[in-house]
Image 1 (cartoon, one colour):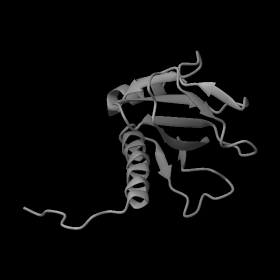
Image 2 (spheres, one colour; image 1 turned 60 degrees about the horizontal axis):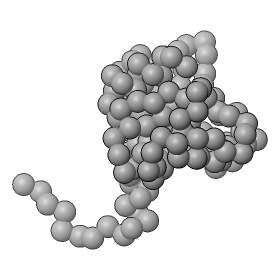
Image 3 (tube, one colour; image 1 turned 135 degrees about the horizontal axis):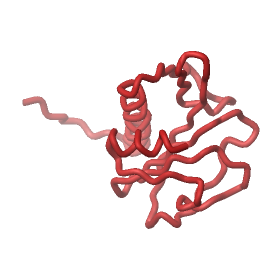
Image 4 (cartoon, helix red, strand yellow; image 1 turned 45 degrees about the vertical axis):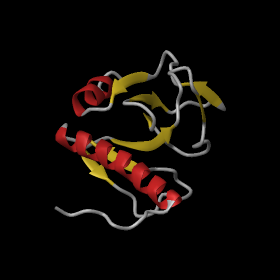
Length: 131
C-alpha cells in the first residue's frame, strides 16, 4: 500500500485542508444537479465557487474555522464583493454552517439565518435547500 513518507509543512497542510472543504462542496452540489465553476483566481472577488441552475448564478465562499461551539463568532471577510452564500466548516468537529452573506462586521455561527449541517452530503443539501 502507498504510504506518504515525507513531512508536509504546516501552512501547506492547512491549504490542502481548506481546498478539500471546497472540493466537498463542489461534489455535493454537482451530485444535486448544480453546474459548478471554479475561478482560476479569486483574489479581489472572494469567490471560491460559482454555481448555476441554468438561468441563475450564485457566488459561494468556503471558509474553515476552529469553533469551540456554535456560538463562535465569524468575521465578514467579503465586504465589497457580491458573495451570496458562505459555507463554514469546523476544522475541529464534524459540522458546518451555511450562511447567506451578511453585512455586519461579525456574527455568531448560530445566528437565526444560518443553517447548521453535519459534514455529509445529505445533511448539507437539506440545509442548503432551506436558504
